[in-house]
Length: 526
Image (spheres, one colour):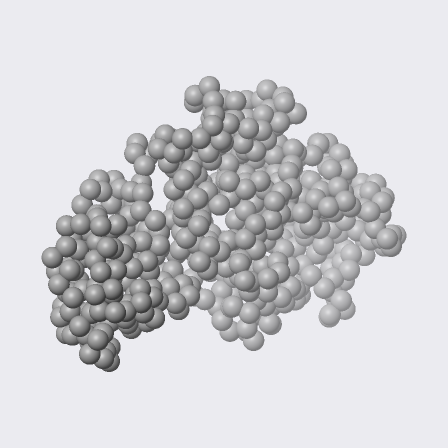
C-alpha cells in the first residue's frame, strides 16, 4: 500500500476505519451479507454482496483478519411463484412451505433454494467474491438455534414491547416470537398455543386442525421471525459489519427494531451502512427475485468484463441509486473505465485529488486485489471494437490481427471485450448501430454515382492503408467534388455501397478500420 492508498477517501476504506474504531482492535472481524433465495438472485442483490466484499478487502489491506460470511436464508417461506420459473403450476402447490422443501423445476439441484444458491455460488468467483456460505435451513433443522429460540420465548414480552414501539397496531397478547412449520402439511399456516417454559412448544395446524407438542431441540419445525432472527445471528456469528437496503434501514425498519432486540441475546448491533437500489436502464421500478422480473449477474457479465462490473459498484457510493445500462450508454461506461485506467497508469494527467480517487477505484475494481495489471489495457474505444467485429463478421481473431501492436496480455483482455461486444451487438445494440458489409448484393447506383465510386475505389486501392485517417479523408472529399456531389450525398452513397444504410460509423475511421482488402472487392462491382 502506498501512502496515498493508506489515506484513501474511498467509502470502503472509510467504512473499514469506522469498523475498527467502533468495534475496537480485534483478532477477527466478521462481515456479513445474506438473502432469501426466493428466486433468481438479481443484480440488485449483488450490490449488497459487493459492498461487503469491498469493505472486507479494505480491512484486509489494513492488515486485519476478516471472516466474510454469506447467509442463505433458505428456511424462509415460499410466498410467490416467480414468472421466470418453469412448471409454475407445480411450484404453486408448495406455497407456504420452507423454500428448501420446494422442488427445483429447472433440474439444476436437489431443491428450489439450492438451485438459486448454486447459480450465485458458481458465478461470484468470476468477479472476485469468495464468501463463506452459511445455510440457515440446515442450521435450524439441526437444532443449532434451539437455545436462541428458547431465549426469545423467555423474553417474549420484552421483544413484543420493542416491536410494538414501531408498529401502528400493537401485536396481540397471543403473539409468540417463533414460527412453526407444520409436521402435518410442511406449511407455516400454524398457530402457537403454548410453551412449557423449557423446550416443549405446542401448536395447531390451521388447515387440518391438528395439534402437536414438539421439542425445539430435536424437531426441525421452528424458526425465528426475521426481526428476531437477524439480531440473534448478529450475536451468534459475532457480526461487526452488515449493510442493509434502504427498505431495512428506513426509520422504524428492521434495523431499528433489530438493534434493540439484539440486547435480548446479549449483544449489540453491527456497524451498518445503507445501500440504495440498482435500476436497469429502461426497466423501471425495483427489480425483484420473487416476481421473476430480473437481470442477474450472468446477464451483466455478458456485456461487461468482471473488472468493469466491479467498477460500476466501486465508483458509486452505496447510498446512491444508479442504473446499469444495456443501451448506447454501454459505450460511455467502457470509456469511463478506460479513463480510470489511464489515470492509474499516468497516461491521463489530472490533479492529485482526482488521481488518488481514480487510483483507488481502479485497484478495487480488479478481480484479484493482489494482482493489479502491470500495463494498461489496449486503449481502443468499445465502439471501434464493435465496428471491427461487424466488419470481420464476428471473427475476434481477425480483429486482433488488425491490432498488431497489442501485447499478449492486452490481447487476452481484448478477447474478453470482443466476446462482450458480440453479446451486446446480438442482444441490445440499437438497429442503427448494427451493420454488415454488403458482399452479396449491390446498390442501384446511377451513372454519376458509379463514376464517383470508381474514382473513390482508385483512391482506396492506392492510399487507404498507407495514409492516416485525416490524410485519406481528403480523398473522400475529392471524389465527391470531382463528380459534382455534395459531401453529405457522397457519404450516403458510400454507406449504401458498403453496408446498405444511409448512415454508419464515422466514415474515414470506418474505412481505415475496414482496410483495403475488406472493401475493395465491394467497390469494384461498380
